Amino acid sequence: MIKERRFAIVIGINDYEDTPLYFCVNDAISVREILIDRCDFKSEDIFLLTSDKDESIKEMTGKYKEALRSIGENFRESKDSILFYFAGHGNYKEDKSNILFHDSEYPIKEIHSEISALNPKVQTYVIDSCNSGGKVLTRGQEPFLPQEYLIGKYIENSDGAMLLYACGSNQLARETSEMQHGLLTHEFLNVLDNEKLYDEDGILTPSIIQHHVLKQTSQNSNFEQVPVVENRITGIYPFALVKKEKEEIIKEVEPIEADQQFLEKQLPESLIDEHKLPISKNADSTNTIKQILYDKKSRLKLQGSINALLAKKMEEILEDLKLDRPEYKVSSYSDINYLDFEGVDILVKSLVVNARNKEISPLDDIFSITKRPNFNYINQFSNLFKAFAPKEPEHIIEHSIDSSNDYIDINIKVLTSDDIFSVSFGFGYIVYQSKWGLILTTLIFKLDWDGEQDNIIENIAQSNYPFLVRDETYRVIEEMELKDFSTIQSRLRTWNQERKNELNSFINLTTSIQSASIKK
Image (cartoon, rainbow, N blue to C red; front, side, top):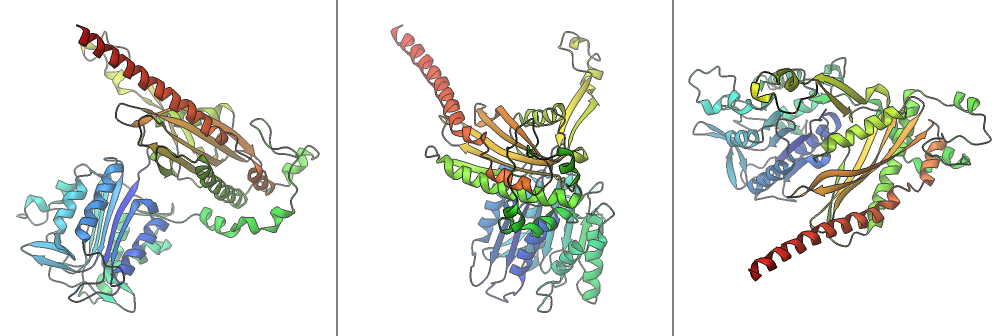
């Protein structure tokens, strides 16, 4: 399973020379926060552009295009989604609704075209400006509307689109000091924050958002501002999710270093290895296990604390690496499915199979193995010329990791080299809940050259460390050296030497061929 990555461009402009606005920057900041809190957006995937008198961005058009280009560099067609939000002035001219940047009147239709060109899985537009809903994308109720305005043109390669515009072409969008927001944005935020509107699975769908934003905005303006809305998203799309216990429990135990109960605990006499749980030699293991709480709250409390500790250790390791040459670009991943490299399926398979073989698979089917029919096998005899081709397997085995589950935390750093003589690589950890406790898995891998870039995952090394669910475990991990990570420098030296040997062999071969040609 490849998880959808969600990108956003969020823009708010206050400091217009004519008729300045007061709450558009607040609108944009609040939208960014709720996208992270409720909608599964990562902070690094949201491009926030705000302009006010204290910090004005006059070249907003260029900033918007720069954000779109940056997203395009990492965007996976038909897999990732994107949201565009704008709060500011707008107008309706020559049968077009525009949003007003300082340096341009930007047609909303152009934004649709530019974003749709990415072929997103789902595209969302929330535009809180005057006159924003004139001849916007529609289902096509207007029989003579030009084809360029029809929604189907823009979502033919997507699962769908949701469109929320503050008002029609002949109406004004409101902002009030009482709300500290534009009216449309106020209602949009309210819907996302209202857990009563989420279904029994904790999901808020676009259709619910559209219905309530339209209803509340219209009523609260005495129908002087009626949003233009559209929703063409297929299936039950989880636009927002109810926050689960995990984050709340993590907050309860921070800062963990100051918790006296850990200072009062005595460290076990032996640390953990792959085959032994961290139980003191002098303790009766049966009695010890009976004293341990294995409820969800206790599990997540310890998991959250360990994740915070390991994240800190990862940053320290990055500092200690002292990579002087070349400069490495560091990327962080909290979802293994976001690793957009060749061989990520092999990495996932190694984790899933290893956990199953060692009987340390996570709870809730977080690691899964599924078998599905191979349609190439079924159809391989439909063509006589395929008779001599290699036979396809009857079934395809797929391995997947559900990184969004409460019971797993992932932190992987990928260091990408811009020097062909130096290898790119990744390292990190996975912490997850298993039947009898927590599992810490450390990872190291090389990214080999594919002819254009370091893009092939190879030399995967992993180690597993099981722990019981008890406070003492935190102290054990705190004292651990994570010896696997201490080998990164030596591994890197070996990989770099192998790379240099390959390149030197190629260069020597090239030189010898050239010399032979000259002699002739």
